Structures are given as C-alpha cells and as structure tokens.
Amino acid sequence: MHTDQQANENSAAGPQPIAPSSGTEESGGGGGAPIILFFLLGLIASLIVGWIIFPQVLYSQKKQPVDFNHLLHNDEVADGCESCHFFRDDGTFSGVPKLSQCIDCHEEVNGEDPEEAKFVNEYVAKEREVPWLIYSRQPANVFFSHAAHVKMAEMECVTCHGDIGESENLKVYEENRISGYSRDIWGKNIAGFKRNTWDRMKMDDCSECHQKESVNQNSVQTQKGGCFVCHH
Image 1 (cartoon, helix red, strand yellow):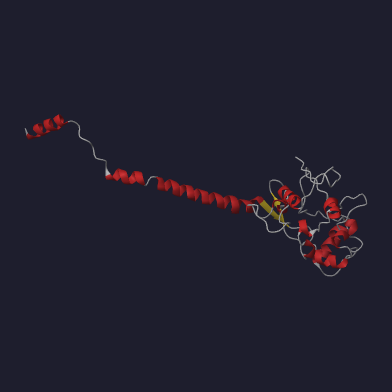
Image 2 (cartoon, helix red, strand yellow):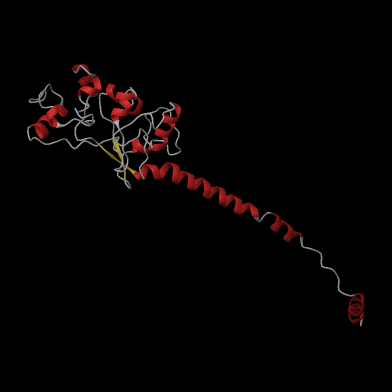
C-alpha cells in the first residue's frame, strides 16, 4: 500500500526534472582536446615530410664524369673565365668548353692526378666529348643572353655562378627526379630564402635583380628584342 501511495503522489506532482550527470559534463568539456592534439601531430608530421624528407628524396646525387680544378686552370690562363667560357665572333656565348679547347694542353697526361689520366685516356685519346652535367642548364623555353649581362651590363661571373673559379673540385650534381634539372636552379632552401645572389637561378631572382638595378626593358636590346623577356 505504501508503494502505491508514493507512486500516486509522484504522478500527481507531474514529471520531475532530471539533473544532468556530472560524468557527462566532464566528457563533453574535454572532447576537443584529442582532436587538437591529432591536428598538431599531423601538421608537424606534414612539415617534416614536406620540408625535410621529401627534398632529400626528390633529388638524386651524381658525380661529374671528370673532376675539374678551376683554381689550377685559372692560374694558367690569361683572361680568367673568358679564356674557356668565351664569346664567339657572332656574339653568342660558347658555354661549357668543348674537347677541342682542351687538347692542346692535354695531349698527354700531365702529372699524377688520376682525374687527369681519366680525362686523357677516356676522352682525349678517344676523341669523345665529356658529358658534363650542367648546373645552370635552364628549360628550353628560357632565353638568357650572356652578352647582355656580361658585355653590356658588365656583370661579373661570380654574381650568378659564385666563387666557382676558386674551387679545386666540382661539387656533387643534384638532379631533380621529376624535372631533370639541377638543384642549383631551384636553390637549396625550399622556403625560398637565400644569402647570396648565386644561391638559385629562378625567374624571381632575375626580376629582383632587374628591379634593383632599375633596368629598362626597352633601353637594352638583345637578340630577342628585349633585355628581360619571360617566355611561357
């Protein structure tokens, strides 16, 4: 009877409010913490992969077919860089020296350097051009006039190529596995930061230099009709 009476009293009083559980409050308040933690861990992992691991995987390292001592050769020539990297009569730039430029001094092995012996025996004696890996090779759609910069603007080679004329060994060639171009074009720093003018050879760097020097595109004429031309 007592139980039935209590039930009738509760029914007459109407529905009773249900107090929220303290356990529910705690779980709801801290539900966002794991999500934030996973987000931060994912962000850190992405930065490590994208900025550290991927650049290492993207480039393969290759040695030049023959090591070359620029410092030694610079001491033996009269006109510095232009003794080997000269301008032809028509004004075009010769670029990397051909075998014919080397034969006069390397008909026979000079000294005991194994690289010298390799050069003479494998290339000079067999009349084979050395397949040099070109650090500054640009895509085919990029036109660059050495004459406009070296002859007309009187720029030093070191401005774009660094102190390579003082090097005793050639650095490792790093080739982009996707594009096939040297890492010297894009630069070592994936974020785009650089310390020297020769740290990379992108169009942005050319534009920066032209703006700094206040180069007027119409004031300096080249074979393509303008000093600063971007080909797409």
